Amino acid sequence: MSLETMRPNPTWDAASYEDAVDTLAAHSDELMYTVWGGDWCTDCRALLPDFGAALEAAAVPDDRIEEVSVDQDKQGPGVEEYGIEYIPTIVVETDDGEELVRFVEEEDVPPAVWLAERLEDELA
Image (cartoon, rainbow, N blue to C red; front, top):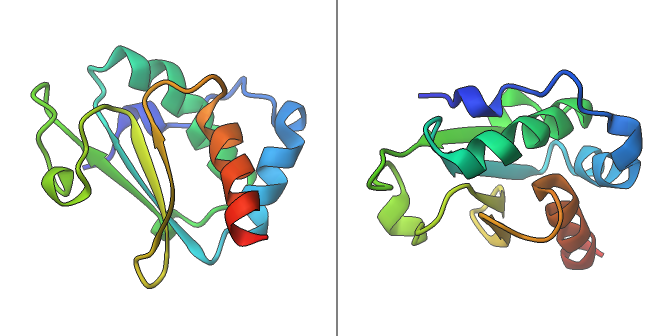
C-alpha cells in the first residue's frame, strides 16, 4: 500500500535543496529507501510530501522506494523487524540490507537534507 503523503509536493523547490538532491541523485541506483508513515499522521503530512519531491527531483527509481503504511497503533509490515516506534521513519539501506542511516520523526532539518548529510558522511 502506498502513502498519499509521499506524493511529491508540487511547490517544493529543488533548487533550494541542491546539495541534498545532488547527494540523493549520486546514489539513486544503489540505495533503498523504506518509509514508514500514515496518511492520518500530522508529522507525515508535514514532512513526507517534500521528501517525495526530493526523491523525484533526484530521479530515485520507484523500485528503490518502499512505502509502508502503518495504522494508528503504528502497526504494519516491518515495524517489529526494524524497531519502528515513531513515524515518519525513513531507513536507507544498501542492496545487501546494511542500514546506513535512519531519519526518525522530528529532526531539526527536512528529511531529505538530514539523510543527505549523513549519507555524505557514511559513503565518503
